Length: 184
Image (tube, helix red, strand yellow):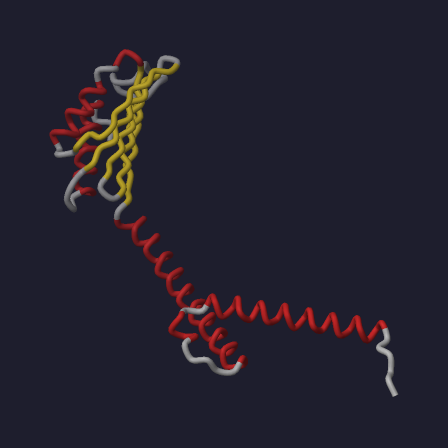
């Protein structure tokens, strides 16, 4: 006796077949993401899924170690190779009694950035900054002078070779401060 297949049974079979095909496609996609050496041995599906799970756990552990190393290096780099000096004074170098000169020296790795803000009548300081930097052994890579509303902005980007960046940066800051009128 032949039993006709009911529509609900047919739908369940089709749904199950589609589910199995999707699982098979996902399984092959997962296997393609594994490194070749780990998928050489063809084992059962459960063995290969276990191997994939172990590989994912290894990657997560490696990622955590690398994150910790990155965070350590960020902190270590910012502590050991980056510093800045800042000073302000009301000296003859400023634009007047209400406009003090401002000097900033920022150092990071082998670069040194000098920012000096003065009054408009003291534009000559630009060449003095460059002279002091070159006397201290810095190579001036970029220099800019901007005048805005009676204020002069001197920006000099330079590079210092060797390991004496902190000492050289401090010495440059000291010399520039003395030049501005002992405002340090």
